[in-house]
Image 1 (spheres, rainbow, N blue to C red):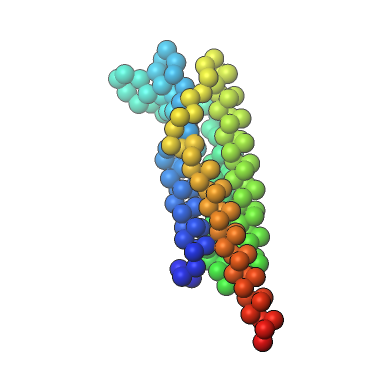
Image 2: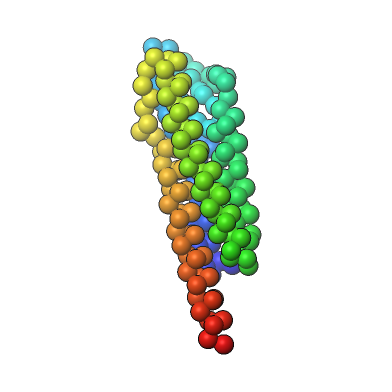
Length: 156
């Protein structure tokens, strides 16, 4: 299982998806303080304290990220069936693309609520992009393995 490069690509995507839970992807600088928007919610940082504010919790972001993580784990465990593994990775790619669109939509929506623009210069914004890139690399590696197996079966 671990001798294939696509398994390492899938492990990198899994790590990036888990890291995405812990880093904010948008910040809002207001007079009250700094709001950090992440998958788990919105936090307000003031000079004196950190408070978690519960705006309508981004259940969409949380569920999409959880679905992507589950699909990556399933794809890791399906290493013997390459065709199903490619299909699962394609579905994970689709959900991750929807996640990226939802991130920007909700960040702009909350930015208009605070009447400020979102600051996207955060580590959390890179994680879904890293997931996309490594899902593509894993899918390419699996496809190459499948082509090699079909060619070797044809020679026999």
